[in-house]
Length: 231
Image 1 (tube, rainbow, N blue to C red):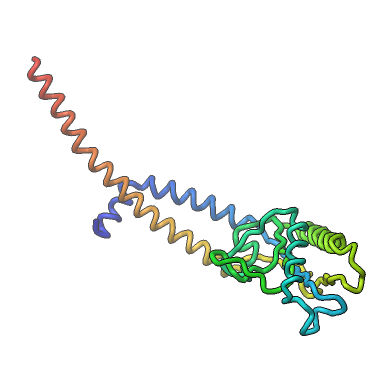
Image 2 (cartoon, rainbow, N blue to C red):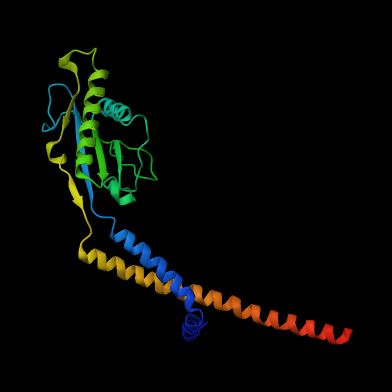
């Protein structure tokens, strides 16, 4: 089918384009009205006793400390598994989540590779439409982490307890909102998708309709022949 054939099919089956355009306008309007998101990526580091996060040999990469942090994260997350993405730096909201919480250790193995925890860091990602809600959830999760870490070491002397420290620069809440340029690109992309979908579907509907017309004509001719034979 040539380009001219596709254009003629779109004119003949104009209602197909109208339906697709109406659906696209509704979807685009709904997406533009979603509003801003607020997110935070708070990090809690675990270090050996009598050390700090700023010291080079603080035990953050120690296997036993990593295991401890993993256990705390699992309990703080109520035993639920966290989603794994292809990149360790992938944002939670990038997967389409508009309201949710994930507590996990950064997995350097990725989505399709074996699990690989390289450091004793608990990463708390929270996303929501309201900054007050995000802050409240952040406070609650941090309290759960401190409580679980304390409970697991309650029988150990204080001098031998692993230390959990919230990295202060990671507690900020960031607003995520599309710019005017992003909106324009989105509308243009939607328009291109409408054009391609309308052309393809109009051509398909036109092809089916044209194939049915000869069959209907043959059916009418046979019916007329049978009538004349009987008479």
